[in-house]
Image (cartoon, rainbow over all chains, first blue to last red; front, side):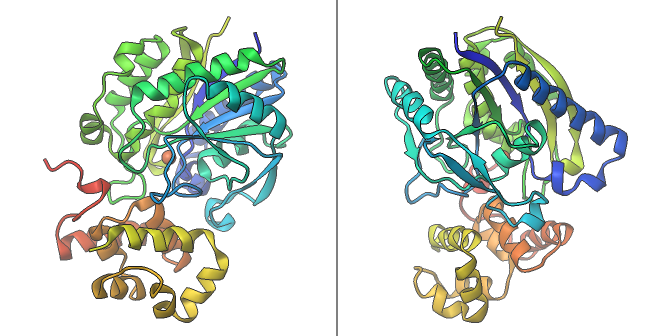
Length: 273
Length: 100
Ligand SMILES: [Fe+2]
């Protein structure tokens, strides 16, 4: 089996660019949890890190919006946002075109994905990399699920995308780590920025950690919007990781509803053994 | 009302430094390539963040436009609140999805 790691983490830009607004102990506890996840990934010696993000109009817009997309290049560039704004320096991040192509071809047996030979990484991928692989040595395969422009990718298709990725990972000789990045309840970049529905988040994470597929797929978009804001649509990336893990159980290593970061900051790992 | 083209302009503007320079120098010329109403053009040239939010522009596009204009984060959030006070609730787009 070449799937070696599956986990989830937050990607909100505030975690980096509004760091000073949160007391050091609370901030460092989150950063430490990212560090622990990064070490857990490296301990599995993966050849590539697949990062399933919910990007925010960096590459994909409503003129041509894919339900799913995967990168297929030897390098990517990010962040696409202003470096001074995100407080992450722009750089090239290595990819692996050949491995991407083999993974994509296998995923396409089950799920239609757009492939991208060019990709400008936004905070959905750059914020996690900043903490998980700060030396940027591990090549990545960026992936995206449409969580922004309705009609959104259905939840059950996001789960199925994860299943297809798992089978693709198992079909190649390389060692594959996969993470999903997003927010749970949040109202990013709106007048309600900073609002977090902690009870809703904890309930969702219990479903995720329990590998409870039916419970995870039972949300309607209307209910998610009402209870968890527009940012809540990003549960798709976490649900994809549940699909990767095939109803195995996971563990939430960290959850803290940090209002200045505008999201319930989350680190979770699936037990693949 | 052409929210799609307002957002398309901001999408392109956010990712293209050359277009940012052109927009600063001559916004009317840049906006001529997009199907925009007079009200939309005025909101864009006036940097009226509050009205753009009320049009329904997604915050993931709008926050970068605000940053490009040098508007600080807290002022950006306040500008959207002021826009709703002045112009009423969001008219279209994802933030108008559910009316309680
Ligand atoms: Fe996001």
